[in-house]
Image (cartoon, rainbow, N blue to C red; front, side, top):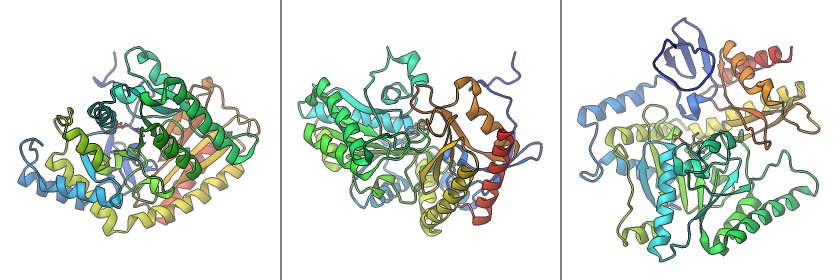
Amino acid sequence: MTTSPLFYQAGPAMPEVSHGHGVFLWDTQGKEYLDGCAGAISCNLGHGRQDIRNAMLAQLDRVAFTYRTQFENAPAVALAEALVEMTEGELEKVFFVSSGSEAVESAIKLARQYYVARGESQRRHFVSLRPSYHGSTLGALGLTGYQPLEAPFVSITSGSIKVPGPDFYRQTDGGRDAYIRRVLDETRAAIEVAGGDTIIAIVIEPVGGASTGARLVDKDYLEGIRRLCDEFGCLLIFDEVLCGVGRTGTWFAYQQWGVAPDLLTTAKGLGAGYYPVGALLCREAIVETVMANGGFQHGHTYAGNPLACATGLAAVEAIRREGLLDNVQARGAQLRQGLEALQSRYPWIGDVRGLGLLWGVELVMDPVEKTPFPAEANLYARVTALAKAEGLLIYPRRTLNGLAGDHFLVSPPFTISESETELLLERLARALDRLDR
Ligand code: PMP
């Protein structure tokens, strides 16, 4: 019999949180933690922000909830305009939801309805990468290329055609260009087997998160994927639930490679941890087609409510007002340097990769062969526990399908200072020293 009625995951007993301020959290025993992963890569502005609290209270005093089919609300319109502006007008329409999975679910359904409306209902397949993570609801899980999560549900999700994503760390002979060509050829071959005219969309995380430990794509790769979409007449969807809204130093990660999608999902950092807000952004022509043919048959009760959108708007305004994208880049460069210094100290740090304030550290048993540690070593869990003991929170994962091993994300709030970044690196170094012994 457990003492708490809550159940989430097996694991050691957790401390009880007391309060948070800035990049720090404290438990009820008075222990301090530096939030090196912004909760779940969501608390982009840190904890205890008075400006966000005040914006939320002001909205609560007016009205907390109205239903999107009964009233338009000013914060929703303003937040939608802000999101469109972040894409520099590339994506013109916004559909609000309350989570990343809901955003992905909405993208799946909008894209499918688009082709049904165009009389192309033979299009029924999505193409996604292995590994990848797109969410926990059955549609989003169907796109997810992460075996331990997929396995129990393969027979009841709609699934997708899984193709290998680029893994520049494990890329072998032939050079980068040849490697990208090979990955793109495999993608094309998988599409051709299914039939090009059965594909709805290719779905990609420009910077992988939970499943890949911040693996990056590449300009040539994204351009190749865009060409495939255009050739087969299907859509390109970027899942920026984790890497969007400034995390990589630009409003959206795709902007660093200059290849725009047709639909984009975002969530996590949009509400900055203060309220759940997610969004699907898309090209106007897609929405027009769907709306002219019976409308979008989809929605969630809490989507786009005034309190959610006022919170998101306050968060976006804070990033703008405080010039935080510049800090993401500056602190990101500092973090990279520090993580690379740790990599040169420990041979089992195989790879350090990322952008802005989204860094992945991959741990390998053999740095030459790049072989992962055996699952029983439970390395990712041990590193996380040691870091926590040193007062540092990191975001760990292990991919159990042989494509990648143990890794963790370092992704602190955008507000982290230079000295706090040093402290983060010091605490991480102490944890890794203990692992080494
Ligand atoms: N897509 C990506 C890329 C994600 O990282 C996540 C969450 N880790 C999701 C979708 C699902 O988001 P949520 O947990 O808010 O449903």
